Length: 285
Image (cartoon, rainbow, N blue to C red):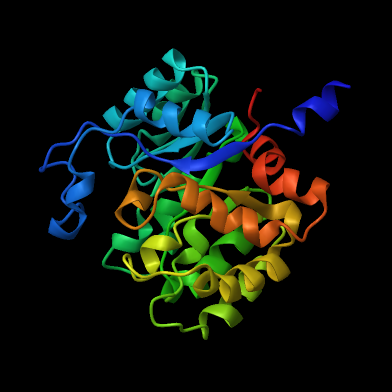
């Protein structure tokens, strides 16, 4: 009976918190004025309760060790935060010590670096970066990949070099939804999905479309390709709250995914909406 109960949990596998200041969040430009305020667990919890989401996984928004520690403290103090994807400098000589320090927190589940903003598209293939990445598996940590479509070919090389490491693609790797462009993203993402250690989040789509005039139909071709490539056992729902709020309310983002997966079996829907997150991030629920 316990297993059956676990499968009913609904989890938002991708959201962020911050205490806003202009210096640390330079990426929040004038077009994102709605995001220039604090977003904290008390704010998110209202959205989760309203939308029958039980738990969440919070993801780094600043590339500092202080950020990771802060998110872990938030998770300690808020039981609905079941996992933290933090940041450590994988190129650092102290990466092992940094990881061990955070691994003392049970809710430390993974690491992310903002690869999409690096000047070098091949940054992830640097020897020092890969050396740090090689430390993750031994303490059971996952790796979130934040990239643009042009990075997918390098990501294919990376994930095949680390076949035992669990990876997950954030935001479908940000296909050009606003332009309605499918190729070469389609070909590249299918190739990436051939690696069975790679999962994908159904997240971050509304912000890749026209913020004020998006429609459900805009996302269907991209979600169809992702579902075909990864299958229902390697897909996770993520809201990308509060970033999503520049284009949509929480319930609208949730509805985009819910409507799309409605034709799947109840078991497959339950996996995408919760169980896959539990399994991928090894969440204790």
